[in-house]
View: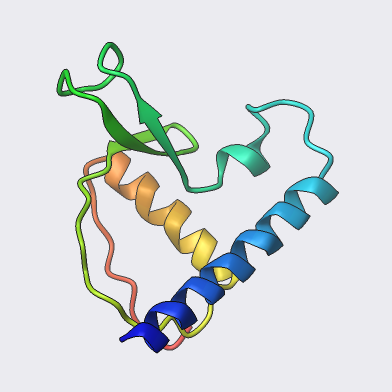
Length: 108
């Protein structure tokens, strides 16, 4: 269990490093730049801005905002995180923002 957790943590940290390198190379000037807005981001919002009246964590990507529900899916080994993974996150948050869904599958 600890080995799986550490492996997943290292995989996500390497991905985070790569994202930061790409954002730095893009020389973003504004928080509304698409390269930044397209990243899956988490924000802690105080009670005056939260949907439920409580403090909560919000997920933001482009124009989509969702309340993070703290769902725990258990520890699984992450094989890889690629630019395709980021595109899938972007596609699925866009679909959820339009009250649709998605069914990603396959070895891609």
